[in-house]
Image (cartoon, rainbow, N blue to C red):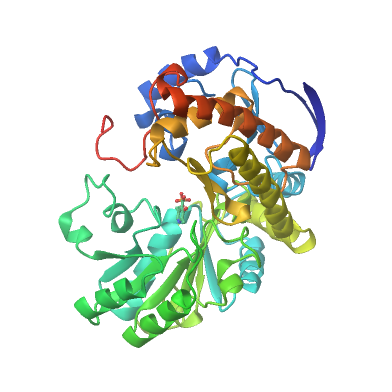
Length: 458
Ligand SMILES: Cc1ncc(COP(=O)(O)O)c(C=O)c1O
C-alpha cells in the first residue's frame, strides 16, 4: 500500500507495506562504533539498544513532523518523539525559523540577552502562582535546583519523592532510590525519603517520622493514574501544616495536559515547579519557576545566605530561548493541547477496538491521558512481560511504527493515527498467536530490559 500524506510540516510521501522487511546494515555498523566509544552505546539510557528489539532502527538520521528516517533510509511513524520533548513535531517550521534567526545573530554573549526576560515573562504567564523563573538546559538540573532552593529556604536536609514516578533527575538525591545507585554515598541516600502516589497516609507517615526535617516533597501531578479526589489538595494541606515545600514536576505534563499545565488542570498551586521537554520542542531548555519569596534566594535583593541557583555557561543560549518563545506562541495561537487530546483519543479508540477483536483486553492495556498514552504488555497469566513488550515493539517496527510509547505530537495526522491502528492490528494478530503457541517462534533475539536495573545482565 502506498500512501502520500500532507502533514503539519509539508507533504511527505511514505511507502508503507504490511511487512517492509527493513534492512539495518548501516545501523549495525554504527552500533559497533557506538558501543566502543560511548558507555551503553547512547548518551541517553532510554534510547539505548536494551530498550529495543534486535530488529530495530539503531540510529535516527532525520525527522519531519512525526516521521523519522533511520541511517539505512527506513521510514517510521514515531511516538514519544525525543522522550516526549518534541510535542509539536520534528523540524517544526515556526520553531526552526526562530532558532535559525537567532543562531545567525550569535548564541551566547558576555551579558544576558533580552530573550531571557521575554521568555521568563511568557512562561510565568502560563503557570499559576509562579512569580519568578530561571532557565537551564535539562530537566534534571531544574529539579535539583528546586531541591537546593527548598533546602536553603526551609533550613532542612531531607526531601521526599513519589516512588511511583520513575524519574526526576540524574542527580544523587533522586537516583539513590533506584537499583542503579552505584557511586552514591549512603549518607546522601539517607536524606531522600519516598511516598506513594494517591496515598496521603504514606505522606503523613513521613511527616510523623521526620518532624520538621523534610524540606520538600516532589511528584508529578499525574502520571498513568489520575489523582484520587482530594489527593493533591490534601498534599497541599500536609505540606503547609509541616512547613514543607510542594514541588510539582511538570516536565511531562507541562505543555501537554489539558489547560497546558497539570497545576492549572487540577487547581493545585505548587511552591516551586519544573518544566522542560516540550518547552523547547526538542531544543535544550528547562526551567524552575515558583514563588518570589523562595526564588529570590537565588538573587541579589535579600540578606539571607545566597543560593547558587542554576548558573551555567550554556543556560540561556539564545536559540533555545527563541525556540521556547516560538513554542509558546504556537501554543497560544493554535489548538495544540486540544489536538494532542483528540489524536490521542482517536488512537486509543482504534487500539482498544483492535484489542477486543484479537481478544487481548487482558494482555494489552493502555493507560494515561489521551495526550500521553503508554501501554502495558502481559503474558498469558496476566503478568507484566518484557518478552511480549519486545514482541509488540518488533511487530510495530516491522509495520513502520516506532512506538516505545503511544505519546502523540501535534504533527500526528488522522492518516498517521489510522496507519498506526492498522499496524497495531497486525501486531496484535502475532501477539495473539504468540500467546497461544509461545513467543519463541515469533520473537527475534533477546528481550528488552528496564533501564533501572543493577547489573546489565540482571
Ligand atoms: C518527570 C520528569 N522529571 C525530570 C526529568 C529529567 O529531565 P532530563 O532528562 O531533561 O534531565 C524527566 C526525564 O525524563 C522526567 O520525565
